[in-house]
Length: 281
Image (cartoon, rainbow, N blue to C red; front, top):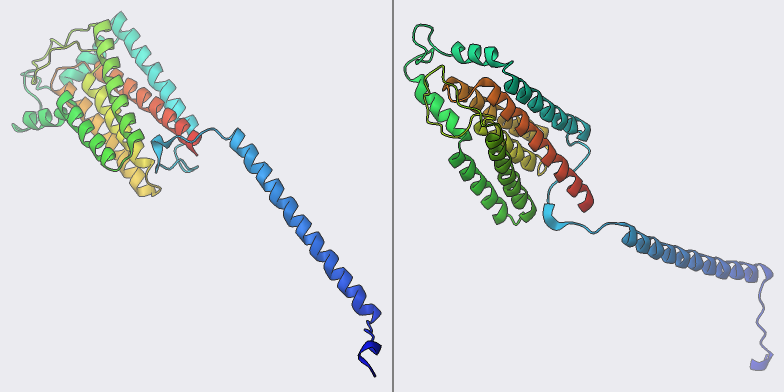
């Protein structure tokens, strides 16, 4: 048989299967191309709808396990409410009996110039009270801001600085507005020169320690870490406020107002940070 006499014989089933394979390849390529184009369109739409990310709060976590915003907003509202109620009672003189009773509670009944307790207690009380002093607050602020700057966390550093600075301005403005004299029924065991209402020590210690707790809590997911920093952030302002009453340099209502305003301001700052954090994500 010669070369030109060769004929290619194809079985009908083989031809049919070959056509099916070709059609399947074409269909699969078409599906992949369609999916690719659709994915590009979705990315383009997301780029248009997604707000620009803010690099200020890089590294901070804003998960669902954070404090419920509604609770924080409630703290903000209650803080402002209690401050206004206390301020109104102070202006009307309705809270004086409470103030006098609590001031005398820590003093020796036979000698109101002395604290109840051992001889070393007044010195320890002064030291604890200093945790809310301007010098300590500024030192703590500088150390924390410096630490955040070394980590290149410029947003949290700026946040800390503005929260304390603006909180101090609010406290100073309110002191001048109410211009309440310091207690005069017991001897002052520490120096104090500015107006009494609200307590700057109570407010600023609440602001800086709660704000520090907010910043730290957003960097860590561990519940034990958050519980600890929150416990410290509540304990220190509580000690500062109580010691200011024990030293006789503040009326108890001054301290209550300072705590209320500090909680309100810290809650407001938390809400601002959460809002900016969600915009970033």
